[in-house]
Length: 84
Image (cartoon, rainbow, N blue to C red; front, top):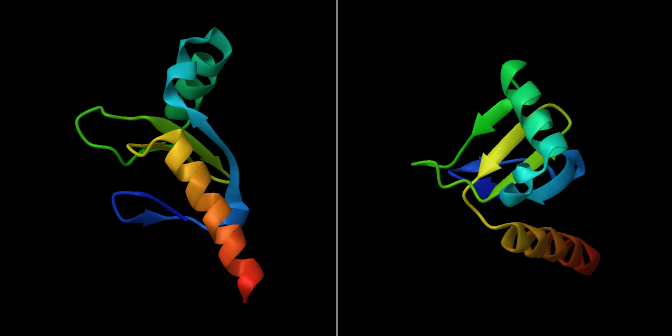
């Protein structure tokens, strides 16, 4: 699935797609801070325009693409695979 900035990850590796605005919650902010400290954060947006964070098996991507768009893309991938 395309996450932005020419980054693609297998859909099976995606654990969660979350709106970056949820980072105002202390536990989510703590999670992102720890992930950054541990080197798991991959910021693929430019100019601090992150809209979504995507948790995968081995990384946390900060994406410029909205949460709703990424969720639609994931549903389109499922629908396309059902047609094959």
